[in-house]
Image (cartoon, rainbow, N blue to C red; front, side, top):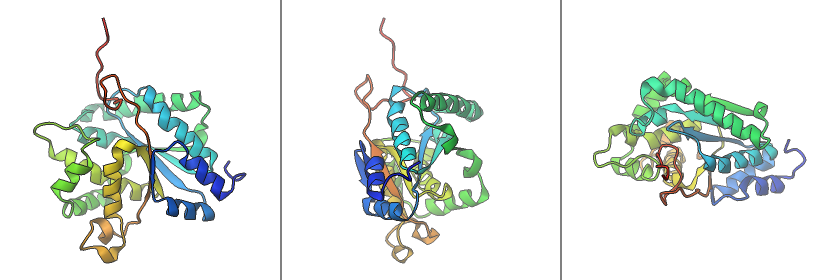
Amino acid sequence: MGEQFSPDEKFSLITRNLQEVLGEEKLKQILQERELKVYWGTATTGKPHVAYFVPMSKIADFLKAGCQVTILFADLHAYLDNMKAPWELLELRVQYYEQVIKAMLESIGVPLDRLKFVKGTDFQLSREYTLDVYRLSSIVTEHDAKKAGAEVVKQVEHPLLSGLLYPGLQALDEEYLKVDAQFGGVDQRKIFTLAEKVQVNKFFARFKYLPSLGYTKRIHMMNPMVPGLTGSKMSSSEEVPLAV
C-alpha cells in the first residue's frame, strides 16, 4: 500500500489531523526517496482507554501511506515512571496491552500483518543500550531531564531518579528501533525536543548532548490530546472514580 500515492499525497496523509510536526522538510525529503519508518510507543502503565483510538487511526494513515510502522510496548518506561507497573507485573501488563491494542486496531480495519510489535525490555536491557544510557546520563543535566518529562512522567514532591532517566531512554529508542520518525501525543513535545537537542551533528558536541554517539536527528509527529474527566489529558494510569 502507499505506492498509488505521490510523495506529496503521502505527506498529506501522514500529517493530516496532527497538531504539530517537527522536521517537515526532512519528512518530505525521505518520502521522495523511500518509505518512512516510524514508531509509536505506549508505556504499559494502566488500562488503555477510548483516547487510544486517536493514535490507532493515525497508524492506519501511516500504513495507507506505505510507512513501515513499529509499535513499542514500553514496559521498562512504565516501571521507571514512579513504578506504575511493578517489575513482577511487567510481562503480564505487556500481554494485556498487546491484546487490547491489537483488538482496537482490528476494530478499525488496520492490518496487523503490516505492523511490527516490539517489547522495550527485549532491547533496552542489552549491554549496548545500557552503555548508551550511562553515556547519556553523564551529559544530560537534571534540569533538562526533569523539564522534558514534566508532562509525561508522574510529578511528585520527592521524585525518584528513575523519572529523570525516562526522557533520555525515549530518545535512545529512536536509534535502537532504527526509525526515521517517532509519533506521539503533543504532551510528549518536551521529550521530543530533548531528543532533537541530543541528535544533532557531532561537530556541535560541546553545545549539545548525544552527537558524540553519532545519532541522526529524527522527525517528531504529534497528535492532539483527548481531555479526561478530571480536566487534564486522559491517562491510562489514572483511576477515575465512578459516579454513584
